[in-house]
Length: 71
Image 1 (spheres, rainbow, N blue to C red):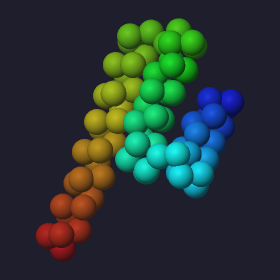
Image 2 (spheres, rainbow, N blue to C red):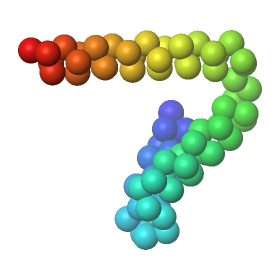
Image 3 (cartoon, rainbow, N blue to C red):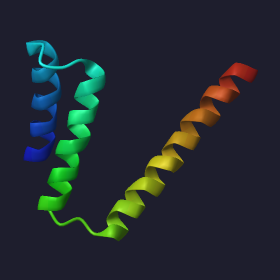
Image 4 (tube, rainbow, N blue to C red):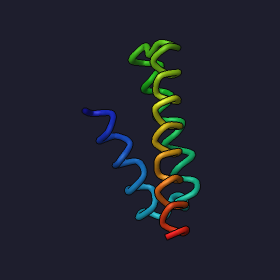
């Protein structure tokens, strides 16, 4: 739970304070998320499963968008 709060505060706080742009905020969030994964000792299998789930979700969203365009 605290990891989500940390990421949110880093992104929103950094953007609104003018420390970095939204694109840079995404990069900072990736670095923080990687650090949290190392601290929480996430296994390679968990990372692989997360990537597969992300790819499946992306494909579903693209199918919806393409179907909408054909309609």
